[in-house]
Image 1 (cartoon, rainbow, N blue to C red):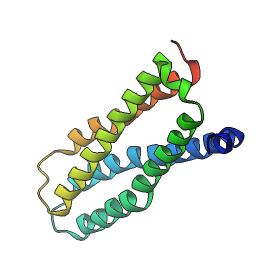
Image 2 (tube, rainbow, N blue to C red):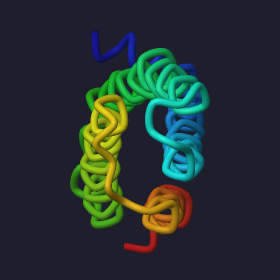
Image 3 (cartoon, one colour):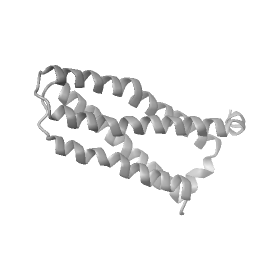
Amino acid sequence: MQEFIITHYLVFKALHIISVISWMVGMLYLPRLFVYHAETEKGSDKSETFKVMERRLLRLILNPAMIAAFIFGGLMLWGNPTLLQSGWMHVKLTGIVLLVTLHHLYIRWRKVFFRDENTHSARFYRWWNEAPTVIMVIIVFMAVVKPF
């Protein structure tokens, strides 16, 4: 299996990048939906529309993209386990743990909105909209520059 992975490494790398891009699109868009949702009246037609949009974004884009990113990234690590000895990879993996944690936080907030129990302001979600960008910059910098 490892030989197959090594032979097709660049295909897995391309699929990993596509998956990560899709995941990040969702991670940047979902909190923006939360911003707009927080500004609507609970129980309104707009609020109900946001609930559908948030659920579909999570189930159809965010979750599958995250899983695909893990599968293809994991295959790349299996094909080249020496990557785990690099300091930059440790920082990148820490960033991934932070993104997954944020992903789960977004899931929790979506459920709060679904129950019409949100107490946070639109400004709160605007701040959280920036978190995935900061983490993404660190991960990309580590993966491309490999500073240590």
